[in-house]
Image (cartoon, rainbow, N blue to C red; front, top):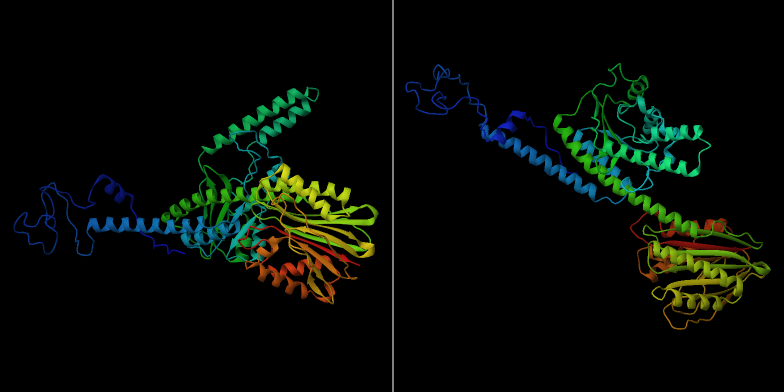
Length: 561
């Protein structure tokens, strides 16, 4: 963290003199100047003892032995300003390098503590909720209605610096209006609340009006709400809230003073996370151990820093929202629940990469008590890969119902469909036709990773023949393989994203997967969910959501009774 220079005294007069080209001297110039400025003037004055009198219209000089020349003082002030801006540039560069919301909040709190000289702090993040851009469409803030409009509502998202979880819990017990930042407008303040209230009253009063009139009224109210928000962007920004002596200020809420005495902070400084382009995202609060207040220089620096931080946080929030949307779409395109059939137990684990990949799985019951199992991966990423994955999965389900007992025929038809409808796309897939009552499984793969059989006496990969992915050859064909799992054994189907997440070569990743599967505890071997979780913990000790990899992860565990 770049060091913040020590505070410098910066009289406004000095900057005015600098901007006007003055020298900032204390004596007048011209015929009545001091002898120190004009040696030899008014002969007879030696310059020792008391200051000489320059004439009837002149000022009296003061000793200058211990005072720096005016130009040096201005230069020192300029150097201080340059040092401040350099440190601020370093802090903003560190913040701009963060690519996740948690990392950005941690960097913001650390930098703010350095700029303000505070040991502890917290950020309350409550971004506004809008479905569309305010400049292009009506507002949609229905999720912020009801209790969310209560100004005494406690904020729901908080991050601390130098504060334990228990201490943050104590701070969250304070209602918003009684908090150190209570005089600031709440981040969830909904500007269209009056318009919505008028709309509800109008609907009660005019229940007999036609639906077209109601829709027109809602559109007018939405436009008025957008205008209110636009006008609010040009409104004066709220000033920071400083409480230099929390314990001694009897005007503060007793609940705040009680928590302050319990946590041991004596002063606070609060400033909103606000920027013209992003609006108000939340509030930052800094806590001091002793009664104090930040200097003007520190306030100016933290204000500049928080303006940049607000814009950066707004971009990260939009990115998180987009990623969540992609993950939600991917989840909706996959099975909502796994089928339950006698003789077999299923478990699945799936994580979508940040860009939205095309890895998928499926399990569907077939006639005569059979079960169709499939895993696959579509080339590419993003919304187009998700859409292609949905089409491919739906097509495979149809082919599985018609000819599921022949996995080679299912994949052949799927390859033909992909080549005719999406010639620029490729995919890998594995389809298995399982008969739980007979403990038999017939499977075929198209460029896919081989399944892994996990049991008490063996842990081995299924010997599948090499085959090309779907869409790469003019005519795809590969032989099927039949396996007979023993009672209690589990067949693990997965995509290559699990192997790529390990960060090593594919051979090394296969070896690590085999080692992880062989180390499954005996107590967990009959539980497919526990087996999948154990494998993930061994291969990805940092967790599914950690690391810089953008690969999807799919595991489908099938345990035979």
